[in-house]
Image 1: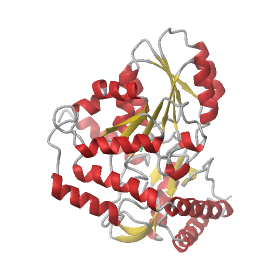
Image 2: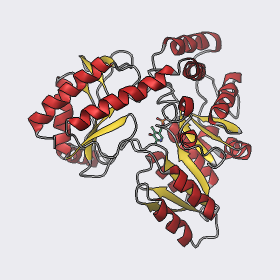
Image 3: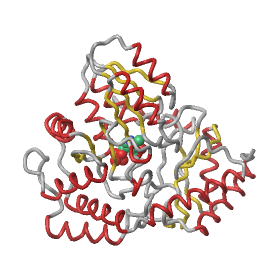
Image 4: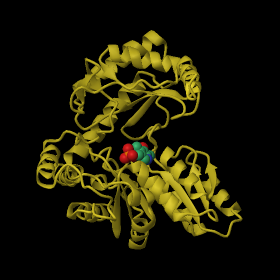
Length: 392
Ligand SMILES: *Cc1c(COP(=O)(O)O)cnc(C)c1O
């Protein structure tokens, strides 16, 4: 008997409930059509919205940076691991987001968790959408602030929670910009008004909105024209930007505070040159090839309309993320398995990523999918959906 044997039983339990994860293995570049587990498939699984992950200019920038500056930085940012290019990327991001300054983190996850934990204390209150990302929830827990959760997108409920907060401490109102499993957009104008009424800090996590919403992909603040009214903007460099990392954009006192008190920033080694250079190249490509964003939305509309007319339940999605909700865990596993056999990869999303009984496959269209790819994918959805009795 080993001390960790109980985990075996728990894993068996997950397996029997259809909740165990078995990720597929990508055998080539991330692309609209690529190979997973030995099969050529139409790939509706990635966050590679703009097709930048394997863009020639990003690859070249990464390779050149590795050759010139090395494979690693050798230190955390605050000791010896801050290179000129890190600061340049931060300046470029601040400019992109229309904020005073920005700070790069190792991931979007640590940008969220590190920032929430650094800005709030146990005297404070966090008011958070029930579907906010795990990294926000972890940051909220780390801060030790009181956490109040409001029903999804319910700005009036957020208002009441802030009004009821008896604590004399600071208040943070926090939301995802685009919800990663639903594909819907936060009611940011209403939330900003609520935050302003209560003097709360307004923070938005634009992981799935950066590169996707707003002019040139500037995110939800730009999409809703709320410049200057959102205190903290979170972004990831790992999704539409195509590489790896996270960042916080905001006023300079916030950025300076995080550079002193953001624990992931302080205690984890900085991003390697290849990563930073590729992110800079991504910003260049987004500026030079704006048609990618237009194409992303064209393809999104095409695919969504297709799924709707086939009668699938796609929830409240209004972005390139379109879930196909079956509700049932095992049925979802079967749907994903059959789609894959038919040459379409769309991943299974189950508890704890979504609530029990809200199981789904999630599709994400990218700028690099052709209409032909998407027509083929819709045909597969139609065949498999009929087989499993999923269409309304
Ligand atoms: C993916 C995601 C993150 C984490 O970003 P990474 O860069 O992958 O760590 C944070 N918030 C939301 C809403 C996300 O979807």
